[in-house]
Length: 366
Ligand code: F6R
Image 1 (tube, protein in one colour):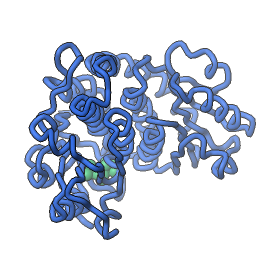
Image 2 (tube, helix red, strand yellow):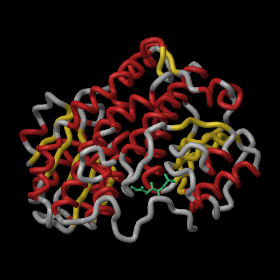
Image 3 (cartoon, rainbow, N blue to C red):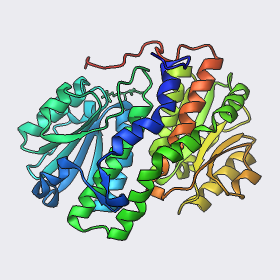
Image 4 (tube, helix red, strand yellow):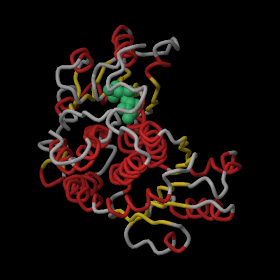
């Protein structure tokens, strides 16, 4: 049932061409010029009148939430906060009846996330679920929502669920923006058309696999890794670091790239490689200067760049090229090489990637 792959994790990484196809099917319509999400279309008043959006989740789903908050603020102009469900539920949070609370959970069974939505419902907020497991507790207890439809995720390290969550959050941000008129139809079409191309773009990105496998041999035995990204890709840096630590047991930290100079730069030496997510976007120049700072301190750099970039390849030790996409979609594409890097390093270390030590697929304890 691993479909010819040696591990569920690798199967689930490679499956993303199909899972994203299923995730967007019937939701990005009219050749990419309109978004149809029943959870939004059936409750327009809740979104038009929303004072705030609060996103609650744990782990990888929380990272997806951080990307989602940026997308929602950018496209729908609704103030959005992201909380760890475990903190939110005990923080005596201010929840208002005009809040929309979005709960993100692959399993739909995470105890803290479930408790957070119960609190939100008691306070009269409208609760929107983004789940994978159909009929799960969170899916049942939310007022409405959107399934990510990526199929069962068996590997303990979340991969295809993450890209499905971010894809749904992108469609959600566009759908609310479309409803509120905070984005133009040209903007919707620009992102919408590229969403329809995601399965092909993911297939193209997966061609990096042999290159990443070779690269992983060089870094198998390091003890620490730094991950940097900005904008939509800052949460991707957190997620890349989490993937590596949970399956390879290598200590890794993710930071917004510009924060490096406020402390973490002290850690950099030739023993500590840095993964920089640096697509060709508005913050490209800034990230280039971060790469120079790492290089100046003897650190090695693995850079994820847009195909055709000529500046970063001249200074990074290794370059992984991803296809050009609108900025809002870059975290979905950039997540793929991060997943593959964690996978290959863990395999080379001889780790059990599908069942890493101390971890469970569904965290139903508090
Ligand atoms: C990491 C991972 C966990 C989960 C977290 C939340 O790879 O899988 O961090 O993301 O336990 O789980 P769900 O999304 O099921 O609520």
